Image (cartoon, rainbow, N blue to C red; front, side, top):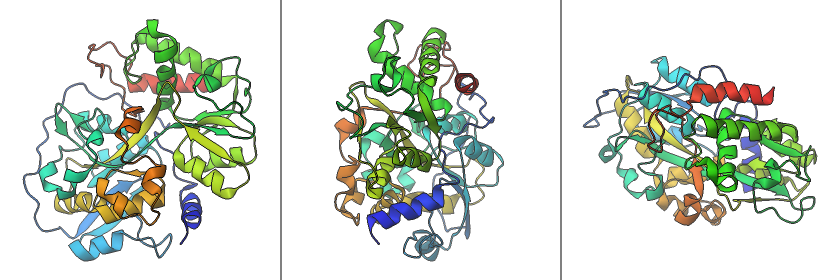
Length: 395
């Protein structure tokens, strides 16, 4: 199967469900104190069943494409029969894990801290995940997957929110996010942006460079003045937006029709657009840097099948499987050895998978807390207020 066929199949499978960093109402602010949740000390025989919440494309069993199946081999190897629940948004994933019906989740950074501080997930004993050792170091012990020096997630896949533009209609090539934020942008009316509260961080990142007097050091740690400035910038941008996108296929369609010509995007969006061949696009990280995402496998604090979940976490980040997932989904693998296993020898180059300098330019999605992640104390605007502000921004 060609890369084009895989990408198109994934787009079809995910079109109706994939919308990261959800915008639903279940967005309560996390507690600031870390719950006392025990960590596993050993992994025994599988319990025969595994119930997981995942993003579409993360747990393929051959039903989408018979040639794409890493679930069945896991079941055969472990005896853990996998039941998959697709999470449409980060908020939905949080709700599902809180129900107590699931053993684990592939959580994005705007959900992870809510789960950690809510006591809904347990610390991960990385010694029980042998393939953890060769995961990229720049994904370990980060704000979104650890707390107080303890890992709570096994990194799975990651990517940058790039500035994507139509190479024929946007000239010169943009080097700054100012192309989509400044009021005098020549592309007003044909700008697109990601439809989620976490996008407020993109505005904050731009203000870090353009308004240094605001003192922003972390786009996810904003005091009231800093937050108000980011919201004001986004309300200004709202007047220039052609359309927002949540499912990435919406952005692919708008660029293909040339109703939008520039905006924030994932690398898979650019790949799909270029494969379709209607227009040509490029995706760049501007001089201010970029936000991004790193998904983590987390085990529920009350998992009914903890042994199967630990076996799954090790399986999904093993070199061959992590290579399969990253190519199917369209992301960078977390596993360094996966780059030797991809069907497309250029995959890791395309996604900058082993480039620590590239990764360092990314400010990965992290749940905003009242207790500032940059260490300033409890003076920051929490995620619940981000959700309300996003509703006000869009009007």
